[in-house]
Image (cartoon, rainbow, N blue to C red; front, side):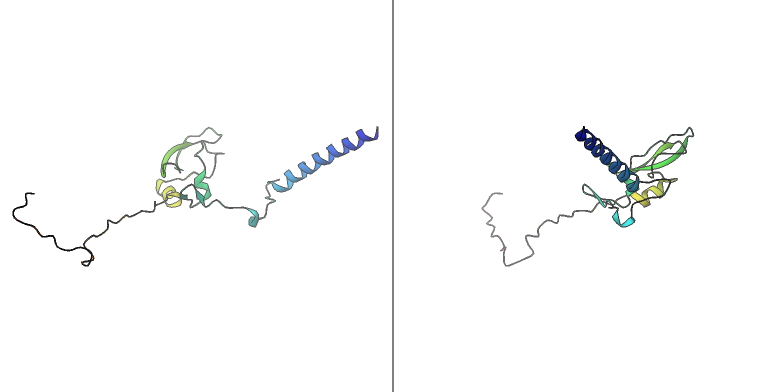
Length: 137
């Protein structure tokens, strides 16, 4: 039947298109197929300004069997903490020292200073209060 052949060709075409899109938009054989200008960078996460994208990852143990003490950044607490790394795998949120981690990822929170109004700054608004000695305070 001719309708079945067209439907089979359509399914094969969709499959081929999806397969082609997958291979040409992802990393294949160690070569990145996406242009650098097409990658969007994350610069803000909630109210935090992100210094580097690697700071957004959750520190990961990896997939090997070594036990290496390293430091990872936690965006929720805005702190670097020590964790154990296996030696391979994992993600880029991994630093050899606490200071490397802090210098790369730590976000200094913007201080919101609220100054109290100075009610006595403008003498035209306030006037001295008359106090009688008879008044009981």
